[in-house]
Image 1 (cartoon, rainbow, N blue to C red):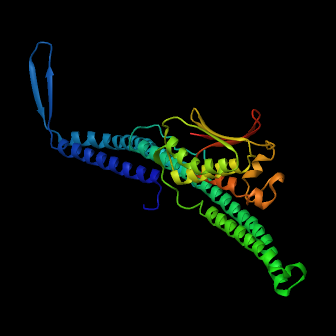
Image 2 (cartoon, rainbow, N blue to C red):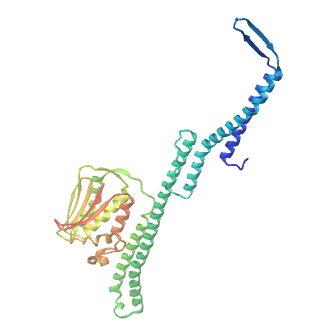
Length: 369
């Protein structure tokens, strides 16, 4: 019996119960009837009442015996039909749930338990549907996370290759100069002239390594956002760049509201804005202007310079990329500034744009809050 399916189990259990009830009912009818007497009352037209008591047990037993087989057969047929209908009503929704569960095992997104009843079986079907929906949602989330991790690993590998290439060139040049100085080859005998150059190269390498190490920390633990006054924060961030701009005869305009309350990770945001401000001041010529102002819920940082072609702007956010006009490492930096800005702003979910402007000609970096 344990190996039978639910339908067969329900059918046999129900049929057995009904047969048991029928047999008990017939026995309870048969035993008392055998001991009962029969009373026949005959009344003629003259209203004379004649009562005849006839006690004939054999007549009663014979009548019941004749009716008993027919009654049992009819009762068994009705029991079989009722057991079939009852078993089907119980097993059918469970079989549908089982069939749907098999489709769910194959991750068929269209699979669902269609059980319209409001009883416990209907509740079970709804719970299975909710569980499957949550499972699909979790799988989709894991797929997104898997793709994100894959992209991060790919970006990290590309960054390491680019970093290795960038470090290889100055290290090779520094090694060649030192080797020629040791061997006393030609002009490299003049140590006084080439030792400062070697020192400058070591300092550039140190700065580059520092930036590479800082960049490698961008995918660490996420910083918790805090509520700050953006106007006050920007005033502090712009102060050192105002001094640098003044030293290079660059006008630095700062126009901010009295207060602008936002909630953001202050460390990551400050580093990103500092890099943008550093680029704005570095690529602005003497006599030109750098402007920092709020436009609604947007922070704009504009600087007067030769506008960059729109087709080249996306590449500025690649690691170690420098446009043609700034290929020199001394004037064009290491090519990590905007890459770090992109990584930081993406990690704190702040959208931005970097586009050329016409009046006055230059570039505008916009952050949306």
